[in-house]
Figure (cartoon, rainbow, N blue to C red):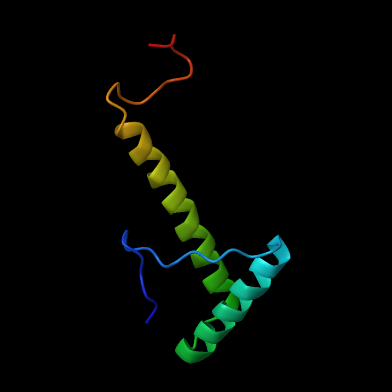
Length: 78
């Protein structure tokens, strides 16, 4: 099992290039797919979807923590 950081997230790893990240991700997905009898494209979709949701809710959390409430770009500044 992967060790988690203090926020409960897996530790982040910096990759030199986007291609290096994709290769590392594909290798990890291939390993998981073979050990759990899953398809690689499905795991890629699950990863992308989970990252998308993380970004959406992380953004929503930061807006909600603002004491003035969420900002609406169509309204005058507060």
